[in-house]
Image 1 (cartoon, rainbow, N blue to C red):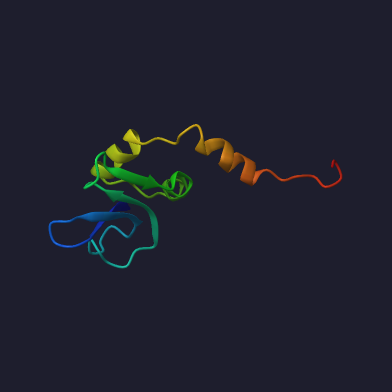
Image 2 (image 1 turned 120 degrees about the vertical axis):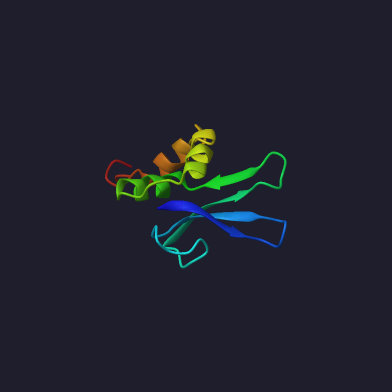
Length: 96
């Protein structure tokens, strides 16, 4: 499951978006951290690794209801997509 894990001081929440087994404790040992969420900034700061979230969802991970709303509000930006595509392209040394 992909859900929020609470960190930060008392009355100053800061969340990590983690991939974790569903039956583990909220702040238990996670498999991978795939983003962060800071609701105390204006506007709230959300940093998501969309490619890792898509990978874990393809493996069967489900999103928590609150996290599903966050992902829907912050889709992959058009500026981030070309950078990902450019990094994954393989250049042919013979063509150069």
